Length: 410
Image 1: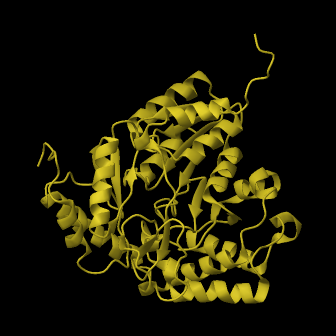
Image 2 (image 1 turned 45 degrees about the vertical axis):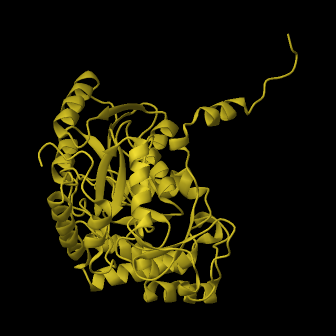
């Protein structure tokens, strides 16, 4: 018997060895190449410093990223970030409660709170971090958290960190949630109950009835955390999300890395929740503040949304036309109403093959496989953007061709 100690990295090596080839992820590099387009950069190559047309790498129509409104390349956002760098540098250098708070942070929080109709907004460097803070504010080890079965991974990690008990309810099934709330409240009338959902699910393209969800939580005395990361800028009046104006939504999580075209995240709340986050939240207290140039770019994005509140409505109208076109071509109609249009394929290999077929035709849409989605539901996640050129749908349909297995109701 060997006296050698066990290899502490053996579990990692075993997990990698057991990973099927079709589940192995690979980092790829892309460079922005004009409205709605990316250029793939080969491994080891130096991205072109001049015009993107100087490169021989393939130009791809971007149907993969979450820059729904095309703001990441908007001149006003780039100018705002550049001006902030010239004046204040790049990083904040400290946490918000030490010396990291800059005027641009306070401006963004104030303007965003007014836009959303909330009393307080607090900024975070990432959406994952914001969701950890959000769950920690509403739940503790004595709580029961009821989460939509398809909730984002960051929220599940938040539940684990809080030590709360977790129950999952069927996706967007408020009847299932109601039964679970009734049982929980009957069993322990004073127990702290928390419900987690999203206003636009990033891999499904679906949305719950948020008004009914908020009323259900109010009736059972449950706190509601609504992740609006993918909805803000697109869904709701003026792109303010589906929870805007609903008193039963206790805490809203949102990001600047999607429709806002920048980076970082925020939590929006009223009264005691906002105050608690500032005083007690570890993720807020112990993190270097959001980089000021990103905050400046987010302010510019918010100004655009305030000046042109129809951005989201125009994108939703286009999404309806894309759904109609895909359905007419024999594909199952992607669920929901927003700019996320999943094409369910099933097997990992089939999804990867379809991704490669589209890329050969100059279209980028990434195959989403387990564990990101449930087993047997690998898919192409098509993302519609405001700045895609006319004729993009026709290009997509031509590259897709008819589905291998048409839907039963087609």
